[in-house]
Image 1 (cartoon, rainbow, N blue to C red):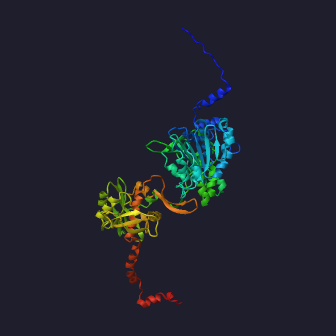
Image 2: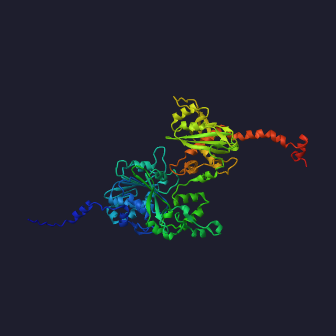
Length: 614
């Protein structure tokens, strides 16, 4: 067999350099790249030197999600002191080195962007040989960094023209809850920046921020994600994977006689699984063995992934420090606001009235379901209409707006609920009673509700929620052209006012003026009627408004809405002033029985002080 000899050539240096640029990048994740290439600068890092994933292990999952081809958007709702900004910079460096493309990094203001370029981004690039080789510093400026294969535009969210100027593949948004809102001429900067990525099928959007309000950008983005992940760590004692929660941090109470500093020094974490104390010394190993787990996941394709992390996970903050900060902040609303946002990574909600399911169950009486208390003078109903079913409630009313739930349930149709509302209920003394008025929610399936109320006009009226007004309800008319119910009474209900009344009366002990439930009330009903709470929301200009919002995303609140309608129905029937009639009926009897012997003269003698005599 004939053999061929291969001749070897020595390539010139310029050709080797050219071939080196054509070499495909090594397959690495962001965390692997950071550990190999990233060097933390001593001027901006608490622990300067080579990046080590073992210091903040929870950042590995967040960074590596950037390497996941199917993920389009990463949301990181974080506390301070957990390394969120450093993780974002690692993603930026990885994109430049491994998968270049036009990039924009948006900060709350131009000034903050300039400082970050000077103190963080440029030092990161200079400290990494791989990035430094591609960096063209002579033509780079404070608002744009140039590389031989891409550019990074640095923009302040307060400059709409900069946010909306350039098509980009990578978009990084840092501290998004500090971004300004939309103006009359422009959409909000997050939406404007997002529009720039539309032309790229392989785009990546990263949003990082501490939370501010429940209506803030980062919290809304997290709630709208396809998947939300929390970090779970193994208890060093029982091995059960737990989520670190602030409620589990314990310290001695005031009755100990110790100062705040002394009490804080004794703070520790108590495992919710085994009730054994976990100390700061345990945290490092727990973090290294931790893992991200989905706490919410959509059924469809996952393109938006959100991560949430509080300061309890930070290796740089001790439980003692958090306890001390809380004790110093709890009586100062502004400092408490900062603690909730920056330490617990939760939205600030200045809750006016708190209710919970246990409180509802405490309002149970000895009266069984379907039985009307003897003090009741009126029954009203409320129906909350959903697409596939309706939720209904019937409530008994007495003087001073004392009330008790008689029955509640879920029906498949309005016809089924109609039979309940027309049923006869017996008082404990055997007196029969029927529902005097029921309000039916017309916000969904409006035409069907209008027709139903027209057919049952002797006891049913349609209602609709409305913005806050001086009175809790207003009687209007159905003005929908072509509707059979045109001209029928329509009740406009300010749900916020009635929810506030329900919450306030629910906190009273059972008795006069209380909001009570029958003894067979279950936990589902209790959870639904306490699914919302009233919070104070602060806008960017400092203006405060109150609003009723769900305590958790997608929580069922159908029975709460039904109870609102039942209370409004009682209001329409005049229950608020019913006690005046009762007192008027008692007045003649009181005048007779209280008249002392001697008639009118005797009464005058018994009340000499009233006449000013000594």
